[in-house]
Length: 606
Image (cartoon, rainbow, N blue to C red; front, side, top):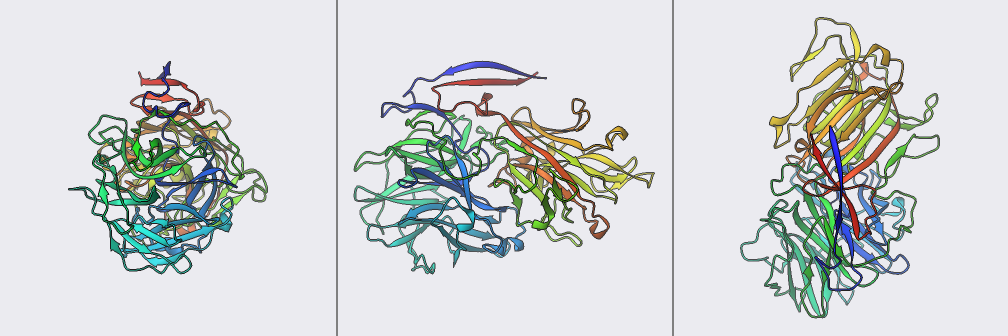
């Protein structure tokens, strides 16, 4: 049973950062859920907003853009990559770490730019992509990218005072760039990092007080991640490393927030400096962090002619004061908003829903004839939980009928009502907590022989008669903790349930385990708990750069033309229940994060 005890945490303003009056208490992560390699830029008139983006790897649409006036309320306003024609390469990608790697967002002469790299590990190839738009609130306005052969990852865009544009990449390599053709000059190595530093990556360049500053990551993306800074009077160097490097890290500590790195600096509407960076909520054991790399913020002091000083990243910290402000243009949702969708006629797919690689759009129909207020899912041959990472005869692993949203809360409940009447062997529709194709936790309604049993490689039964079953099944082939994989559980769908839709639920009642349950919508107060699985299975492994998504799927499990039954999903609900901000310390997901007094929840299982 879950017991919640309420305590109050009163934070003195200025305790962790008190360089300016009017500080306020905020919590991290600022962008909860999977938001790898964040980059942010402040744009004054006419926007007066901070805009941030992040890496999306195999998730489409890609390169989300979030806007915020107060650095608390972040609204999704567009995706720079929303059309398959922009980056069709995804359909050639198999490894789970392929796709859109670290991105940088910048603004120059009324144009927004995002520069990134499409990584194709199978071909050992990287392609640089540069997108632009003059209307950041419209996904369709983002250009097709101009492309270049990327010798280095983690590109940054920088304009010098004479208007010359540069790309700064991992390594640290500097190249002039023509932003109409993507033509690059020969690379010049300008900085080698700190003594003994490795994985010099994620660079960003700034010019301030006559100095060129480089902010970069060292130590690799993990518990040794750090942020360093260097500066020079000349853009090509030599660069002087700051004597107090690293300027930001939690390595070697017991802090709950780890993997602090890949930072970007920006100012707010009051001129105060901030840093955005990726972080894990894992503690030093780095075993359980299912949301992967999230975006945290920390305030920075940067006096004239001096070096920037960063406040340490914590779950609760005192920061620069900005008034709460949700007046951000655009019609999309704020990151922390709950889901409440019934797929009404003439509605569209919510903008924060995503797919693994590019989807077959015809597999998703809103309110089809005869099924108003539902999302129709036409099954794909590709199965969510086969664990396939290579081509398999009879499977189309590229275009799943799988639609998801980010897990954005440590504690949450996600559910859908599924109307599905399978007719052929292995037809299935269900819900998933999905990190990638080889790390996922699933509960499906599937057609199997009566009395079917599962021995991890095949099904057996003494009866050839088919019937719908509930199946809890976990794929953990890419996990570092696969020894904790729970067994598959299969039970027949109760006879009394078969005339009504079935509610399938994924819930995190604590930050270490998921529970998956099913109930008839006629009697939702009588659920059947089908299984529990540790969140460590969805942490790292082959998903070391990404984070967990939850959603619904339909599949033939390779049965091809013999399985065509469609599933109808409605009552799509996602509700955040709590955010863990330190070891076993939680704040309510909908708490006022601008308050100087935070209500916190201590959670323990009894």
